[in-house]
Length: 483
Image (cartoon, rainbow, N blue to C red; front, top):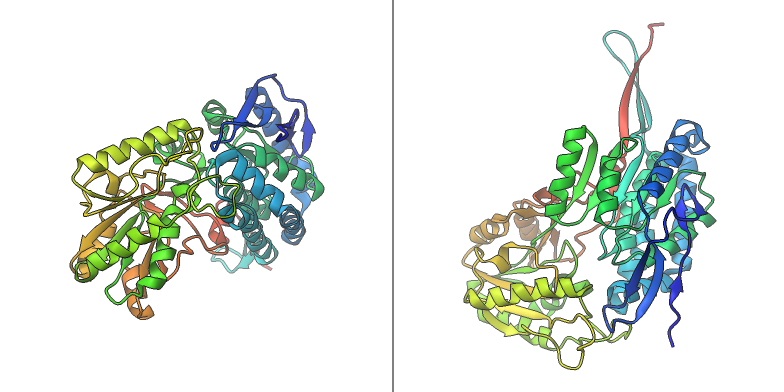
């Protein structure tokens, strides 16, 4: 019998403390509905305590006195702690939100440490202070912490996305309050243990699992100076509106409907497995998923057949099984959403090639068959809206100009890819795609040392790279006297 994880305290201001209420989050496996954990639900009083601890750290605690090199060492200790517990962390995420084990070890557990390592390097060499010549006198340009930050994290890759925000805040010297989602809060307690072991000064980090109400409270809290949100475009618009009204800094990493463009000279044996892995990995619950595949008319049938054959061969089942390719979606509500799109796709006249229903023998879980639609019009809902499930569409194009036009004809602009035997040609096409990231012959659309974010409704601002650190800093000019 599997042990249910019980947590009784919250990580507030870098220390464990009793929650302000007795409310709980009961976490159940999306595979079979067994209880995975019971953890405290953070409430407004917990948020007030976390903001107070962060403000104290910013205004005069040990954290305020650290240098970039000091903070780099802290970040490296956090990275090492996550790496040492990578298998445990991967298992927790698999249990709480259904991520297949073959994806979890790297995508959910090792990749966060890679993100932190990138931030550690940046913290060591970032120009937090620069002297310049001025007309009135010499000036000192200082990059100082933005204030108290809040990082709101979604459930699909909870620790990876938390570390995008955490690493940047730590590098900048900005205290941060992370709000993990109620669907996947368990892994955040392991992160808290790692942070405590890394010896963070008091107040630098708090972790408050909670729902939308807590998120709204934190976003509007008078003691908060900066909000970083990853999630749906609908929620992002609301958060952006609040931050705009309050003149509060914000970074928004929102939805995507990214296009993988297969050019006419591509090697399908190489392209098909990688491109479908991008579209279906983590059960299709990835904001940067290449869920629109653009195929040239001259090879359309060949490409569609190859894609269909690959999807038919995917193993659907228990996410803890290392052989599983596609597990359950996170919840019954999410499955209902995906199934609504399946029905809409079939009604729209798209050709259903594979899937379209629930897999047999997995009735206890929130499963949807990996699904492939062909002959999709780019004006249809399944081509334009983010489904966030194991559904991929194939769209025909006549020439490269039309492929670029179709890829750009989207409300989103988060990621994308181009597949070709000619790298220079691929770069030329990728450079015409209006997305924050576009890969050539690769699904590496999130590069841990480079800025990540989106055009259009995919968001505002960037995470990772020096741009990610800048988002947690303010610029101050000190004018010095001549002489």
